[in-house]
Image (cartoon, rainbow, N blue to C red; front, side):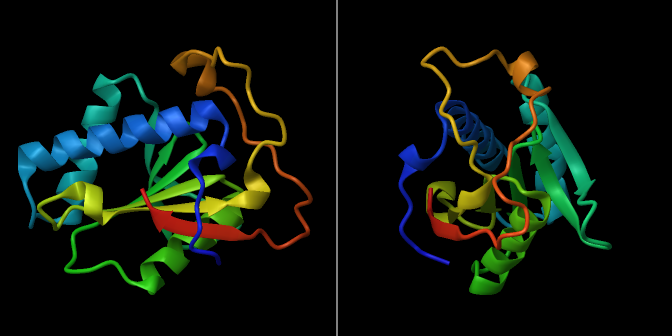
Length: 167
């Protein structure tokens, strides 16, 4: 797991989607403030994403993992794990990375709402092996067509690598 992260490693449409999700999370943080239960932030973020026409699935299952569920799966592309804790640790990042690898998702966002500035409590985890091989042209598809796309993977037998960094 590397800590270097370059935003240009992802296709533009995924970067824009991540930006939109973080914007929605900031809106929720401004409205609710820190210190509430994680489930309240999840419900509020799901509502805010819906208002922005961003498809999100709550408590999504990963077929290859029995038991744990993803807090939010955004347009079958970005995994969002929400926390309301004192501090994000490497264990939380490793949990997110395992979800990315198991589901072959390219990007994960780990968002801790128990802070005054959400910008400082949002972490990005990149699954390099799940990044689509070809970049999109400058005109990215609409949100409605994005929700029907699936993420392509390279060799599923190889162990994906990841990069972790702050958003």
